[in-house]
Length: 396
Ligand code: PMT
Image (cartoon, rainbow, N blue to C red; front, side, top):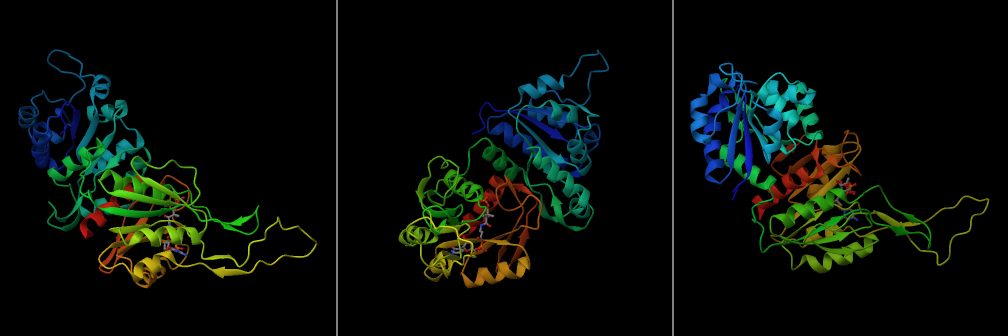
């Protein structure tokens, strides 16, 4: 499935380097051509002979061969690759990548690479949780590096927690996903996704709305479609194009969004309610543009229908995912919406968090269900969408 893909496998000095051997074998078996770059310390954890044998290519560690002066060109290597995968990636290497330090071949190759870069972090739980490491990972994500999340469990230190490098098979799946070979795990399923802001008219000229750009909902629609689902995107007004293969139904008001969703929900397998829907709408809409006068103006508002709550009441075994955009008492409010609207899980984003919420390309979310809460770091909205769809996949 990875036939003909050129992959540089970077290995850094971590005990998890023993898993790189299996990873290399899996990549080669899937048809990829693999060249291995190691940091000097990585050689202490796994031998170049092992990696050269498995990758069927000489191992690169130094800038040049001290025997004959032959130059190992990181520039050529960076140009050759379709993907640079660093697994395991230590806290030290990620810190250097985040700041542009280039004191070994693995790092100069990173700076020269024109291809996508992915890292699979591996370290002790406290190192992983440390603010400095999290900050560096956030920087790497902003720089476009894909993070293949570590798992939780027994660590080399004897402690247990998050920091174990992802299993080789999972890394290969992540690599395939990066090359666009997503698992078609949702084939035959139909999802409704709401996205964007609703528009509640006051008169033919003015309206009440909010800052939603639709980016988060469109990313969810795209992620579902890439896994094979049929997706109906019920979209408020946005400047975005519908993702490939997604059916878009344009609506303006909360009422129109309600009608479009209720009508389609019965025949669907679930819905993701990402739209920022107005809770109130003008009681009456003026036929003509309201004229200004010297007096203040009051507009009487009435409640809109709660689309998510309506779907929640008739959901049966369909999957229903909600969003909560909060500015205070975030967890409490999100948990209350989870129950009130009968969501399977709710995606909390807070306006108090930098890089989260409206308009931007990133988000910081917590996935909350009855069992608990999973906080995710700052990531692109597309990566958040994939995490949401991973969770839907487990439920369906
Ligand atoms: O579009 P972007 O610029 O990318 O921004 C993304 C986002 C911030 C809009 C998105 O991540 C988000 O948080 N969406 C939900 C915002 C919201 O209005 O949340 P809420 O707490 O008001 O509503 C809770 C849930 O009920 C939501 O799933 C909402 O879609 C749904 N709802 C709300 C009111 C209503 N009348 N009907 C609904 O279905």
